[in-house]
Length: 184
Image (cartoon, rainbow, N blue to C red; front, side, top):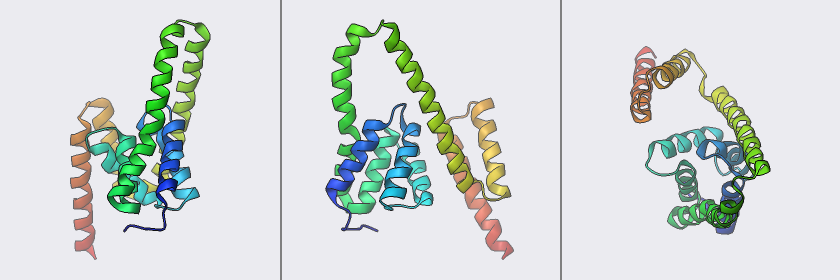
């Protein structure tokens, strides 16, 4: 459902902030995404973010860009998708261009290396916080907890492809739904 009351400029600025303040890739964007599109603007629900993020993870390309594109599309159609995507990637293009010129000359400076070490730790904390928040919404019954444990085993111990794991989760979810329908 597209809402014309969502301004294109608001989409651009929101995703510009997310893209500009997210260090560490797609997972690191979750706290900013939750704060910006759920808490601040109410454009989507937490459940919708989980669905959009899962689809964004399964489709080719950068998770953050896929997610921005899908939310932009939901809010303003194709133009919204384009604007949200541009907002998401603009800071990276600007920052990487500037950093590439500077870092080439200071990459061996100890304080620069330590600063990036600190950023990595902060990103780990932000990802952990988001995972806990999302787990509280996703692990709601015995089947979802069993699926969670199966996915952990499949990815950490058996190194299964994320695509296979997602396909398994889809089939599992459909089977659980079929069993629930038959039981009721």
